[in-house]
Image 1 (cartoon, rainbow, N blue to C red):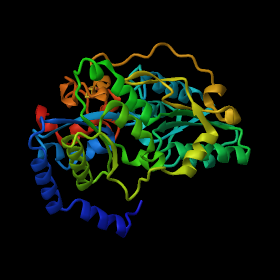
Image 2 (image 1 turned 45 degrees about the vertical axis):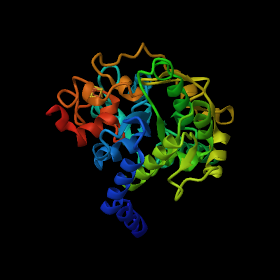
Image 3 (image 1 turned 90 degrees about the horizontal axis):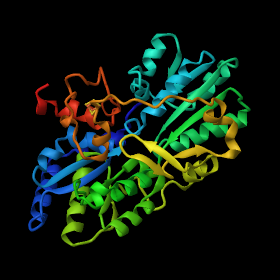
Image 4 (image 1 turned 180 degrees about the horizontal axis):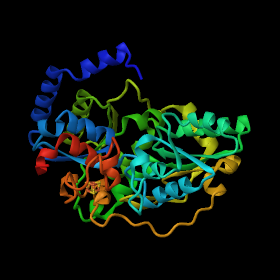
Length: 383
Ligand code: SF4
């Protein structure tokens, strides 16, 4: 994909070293008198990577401790769902399609979808889920299954896929929906005993996800700020974005405020993308419960295809029953996702588990915390 001139100019501006330096100075000056370090959870894996890549955690050492959140769609996919994808891919009638990262996540038997492809299963990586329409039309005697993952950012595209399949009368295309919802996960984290009661994991504020908020807007976060008295700042991904967001958080904490603020106003509005929200509401409904890796069962935290589009629901078409999933016993992805451990706490990190041989989902995904530490901080554990 080509980068536009506007994006190049924006990037230069938002990576400008003078701006970065003066923001760091402002943060240092304005935290005087505040108990440090502040514990700020960045929900989204994209922010985790920016923080590591640009050394923001090192620039703010002693001032802010970043707690990495569960906002990486591949990382939070429970092993049982990966096993389901693998089982579907083994069916010789099926062409299983999904996005790149998911194909590398190992299931209970340590195999991933790419291993199955090498053994003869028809597994295809797609850049856009709409590619599945072409695959289905080109293979009328096969059953094309799109294994859909993602937060609110990718759900509208899956909704378009299902609506188009219906319009075209395609009978050989269906979707496994694993789409998950950000506000439900934030609420779950804030209600977790280790955060609310025990205080084991301190969270003073949130850096809210940028891409998700383009779709859902800033509206759903007001509840958290009020109910849990935590500042939430929706942020962009460049270093100046993240530092401006931290400064906004610092000012709220200093002034004893807890509100939602929007640093990413160039893309995010209060209402979000209403057209995309309507599209999603037309095709999906809330699941009563959904298992998240590391967070357990969270009620009303994911979407399933609704009755109007039932014939496109792969879970209805292929009723697969699977044994209990088995996590790798030494992988601590669950703790990393909950923010109670960092990747370098894992004894497999960088030695046995690497991006080319990932044992857990957090090392697979381009948004995973283990992958970020491996890429930018592996000197911490001498690997
Ligand atoms: Fe799991 Fe690998 Fe991360 Fe360890 S380093 S927590 S094994 S993904």
